[in-house]
Image (tube, rainbow, N blue to C red; front, side, top):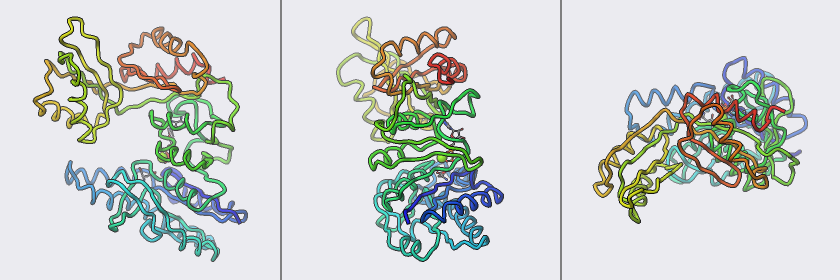
Length: 403
Ligand code: ADP
Ligand code: ASP
Ligand code: MG
């Protein structure tokens, strides 16, 4: 029998009632496939654990963070396995260290490098359904690790890769990937097929329906992903390679963020190497700079430099800029009330005028654009956070995404 990987997100296993429903879904596959299940923690659990750590310290140890937050998946997996046993189905929970799922890299942001298949294959052969904890791993020194928020998606893709699964189904609380977050815009439409490239951009630009790393892993390993609802039995979205998709739309989706901050250094010396001197200490401190804009100086001496970072890094960024004496500027301005709105679509490669249409649509609604960044298949603008809903709505209309 072929292997299928089923991943259930936090809301899907968010209560005992939900766990009972999920057990039924698992059973429905078990006659046709060898099923491997990946589970997230029950919704809210991971956040609760993180909040507890923050009550102890704002600088809670990364090592202890991983041990703490990985605990949520232990609870959901044992409850789910227990429910299957109760229904007369052979099942057991597997924590990452028991398999093991080996990771590399820093605590909190590790990546899965290798999965030992032996024990799970033996268990499958014995007729059992393994319920594997998503999000967690173990490193070569036997430390418990985690692979970033939303990481169970990545766990599922990597399990599908190592076990050469026929399919990988991501069960979540919406019917699939939509043109934009359906919880923010009622007229959002379910997308039938989307390319890895577009999904990767959407996920990186704020559509949390899939974790961005997981899409990279799927693209590299050519794993088709089906995203669907665990609440209602309807066809979902297929994430696959571009060649498999026929699409005549210019724009496929719209994403937005709500955790950006804008930093402006006013009166920076306009000479070579100055931008590097600012961004070097930031990168050394693991602060990711996203959008950047530098004004042309009118007098050839001074300029203003604006960039965006994650709001969570704001205090650290402020400290670094003030600490490094070789960063010379007149004034430092911060703005936490900004958001990035992006339109994404492979169609824009071959269609001229997309940028103009986006800017015009926003202008008509009186939405001021603060910073712009583009790639081959996306255009992002930074705007006031209070304008996000209005911006998504008007762009959705402009590019006829509800048709
Ligand atoms: P899970 O716990 O199943 O992993 P997540 O909360 O991580 O679920 O992701 C599902 C959520 O992603 C949805 O409830 C929805 O609000 C949000 N979302 C954001 N953008 C999109 C989109 N383009 N399509 C579908 N859902 C989206
Ligand atoms: N439980 C983890 C989180 O909340 C992983 C996941 O849900 O995928 O981030
Ligand atoms: Mg998720």
